[in-house]
Length: 353
Image (cartoon, rainbow, N blue to C red; front, side, top):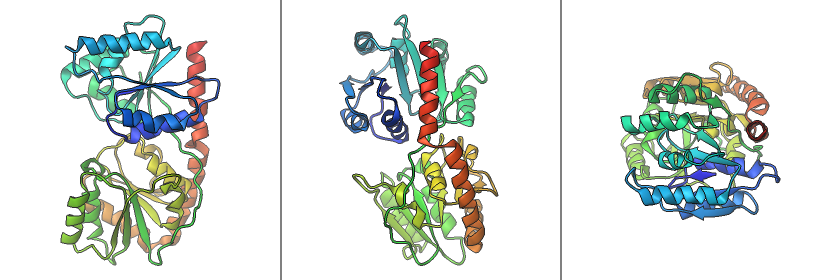
């Protein structure tokens, strides 16, 4: 399994969960270009070996291309799987792999984020023809990648990335109605839009933001400018064995105001915890959240639409709780990590037969 990620993000979290549940009969070697990412991924599966390479800089980096090719050949895998965080991720490593005969090549698309350039799109179209399987984490995510890169319609299949069972660890349940957001502090997550929306909600409710990132200071400043310091709490994600998912039960709803997503597992975790979900209509979000049944889908880049949905949730907490229960039933049926494991095993089996 190959990743060119320089930092840990959603694509790497998805990969870690797949690693943790694959059958013992499958031997896995992780190949990557960042030591910290490999060191974080490897412990999710016992006896997983790692290989660290220098990243391929561009098409002129022949030494890097040849080193990747020789590494892939030397490992002699039955399957070489690429974990992509955007449509252009891993493109040079995939190109190197296409020159190796008799190798099953799989690409996993974790985000609808398009390619970097027209030349990158051409490279993707060329290498995609040499794949054994091309998978996205959601149907709409796959269609968006096909359209933006010029791939043939419906050439990308879907495997939803589920999550482990969500528990109920001890957590202080706020006395007042409190909404939750779990996201890194990055413009792509739309947390600035969420704070603008919260300022429109009357009466005010509490909001807990779990996460951190480069945008933290600007978000705190915006919070002060909007007069929200008394109702917004910033928390860092817990470390070690603690999981945010196991604490979600203590809140009244999840809000995800993203500008771009693939199939966000945070939504699935919230559904498994019994929370109604308010989310923007990006990526494959609408394949999990059913409007009026498990939550609200609103247009992106619209604080007023977010505020309207938040107001509806807060004005009828009993109806919101029923949505949370229905969401839990849907997630239990379709979006568990066990369902993901079965889909991956079926894919590998079909290829190797």
